[in-house]
Image 1 (cartoon, one colour):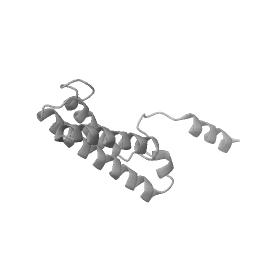
Image 2 (cartoon, one colour):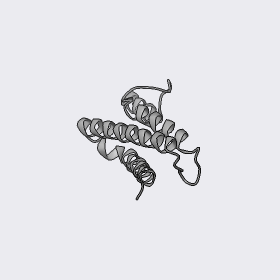
Image 3 (tube, helix red, strand yellow):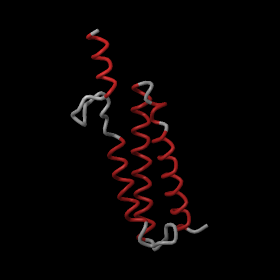
Image 4 (cartoon, rainbow, N blue to C red):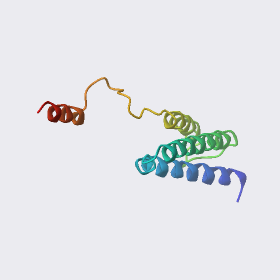
Length: 110
């Protein structure tokens, strides 16, 4: 197996692992330490995947049959890594009251 094939397999595998961890974040967020560990693991996996994808592009490899696909996917991996470490738990990012809070306020009033 050549270096380019190894880079392609490694980068796609790491992206898949990051997606599975991302989908499982609800399970990991049952404890603060579990959530923090999952966030850091996702970020690290995405950054390593981005490095592999950039290397794949500059070595002339193809991702899904396209030579130009590796760089945009590497940029997306970096964006996902940055968003993975953003801990917004408990913060109101939309600026509006959610339906659960409205129901809770109504119960408290009664």
